[in-house]
Amino acid sequence: ESGEIPESEFAKITPKTKIVAVTQVSNVLGTTNPIKKIAEIAHKNGAVIVVDGAQSSPHIKVDVQALDADFFAMSSHKLCGPMGIGALYGKINLLENMPPFLRGGEMIEYVTETEATWAEVPHKFEAGTVSAGDAAGFAAAVKYIQSVGIENISKHDNLLAVKLIEGLKKIPHVSIVGNKDGNKRCGIVTFTVDGVHPHDIATLLSDEKIAIRAGHHCAQPLGAYLGVPATARASLYFYNTEEEIDFFLSKVAKLREWSGYKD
Image 1 (tube, rainbow, N blue to C red):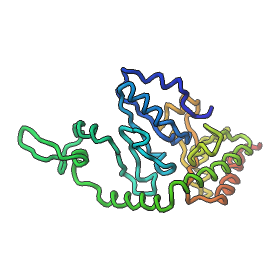
Image 2 (spheres, rainbow, N blue to C red):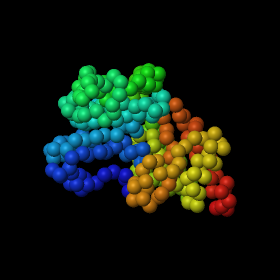
Image 3 (cartoon, rainbow, N blue to C red):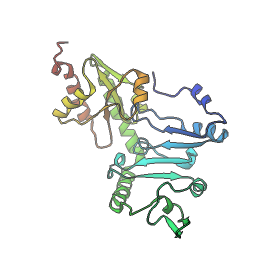
Image 4 (cartoon, rainbow, N blue to C red):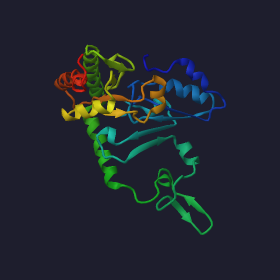
C-alpha cells in the first residue's frame, strides 16, 4: 500500500546470497529504500550490494560512503545531461579484483600474443574511444544541478508532489499508485484513470503540451505484483511550477470525457 519494502523481506538475504541489487528510489513509486540498512544486512552475510541510483541522484543528496554501497550506478539523462552515458561508483578493492568485461583500446597496460595486463582503475573498464562530448556534458550537468542545490530541489519536488497528489485525490476515477504522501515520492507521481489506458492518457496530455511517461517503466514484475500492467507517471523537477500543476490537474480531470465517458 505504501510502496515500501517490508522488513520481513530483508530475511531473504542469507549467507548464500552473493549480490543484493536494489534501487535507492523507485522510478515507479518514488519510494526511497533504506539502502544503509540493506547494505549492513548484506555485508553481515558476506554479500555485495549494487545500488541503482538513477532516480535518486537527481532528487536527493547521495553519499555512497555513508550508504556503504559497494557499487552505485547513476544516469546522465536524469540529471539534465546527455543521453547514453552514466557513471558507476565502486569500492576500489572490488574494482581492482574484478576482471574487465570489455576488451579494447586504452584498457590494457601491456599486451602480447598470449597474455595481457590491465590498466589501472578506472581505465581497465573503459575500453575503446570514450564518448568525450557526452562526458563533458554530463560533468556540466552535474555542476549545474549542484549550483541549483540538491536540498532546494528536494524541497521543491516535495512541494509540487504534495500539491499534485492532493489534487488527483479530488478527481473521480483517478487512482494513485504507491504512497499517497507527496513528501515520500521524490517528485514521482504515478497514477491510473479508470477506463483510459495509460498510453491514451499520455497521448491526450501530449496534445495539451504535457509530457508524461506511460507503460510499465521497465518494471514489469512490479506492475504484475500490483495488478497494474501499465501506469501513467508525472515526473516533477525543479523547473516545474505550481501553475503547471494546476494546468495538469485541469487536463487530467477531462481525460474520461475526452475518452467518451459521460461521468
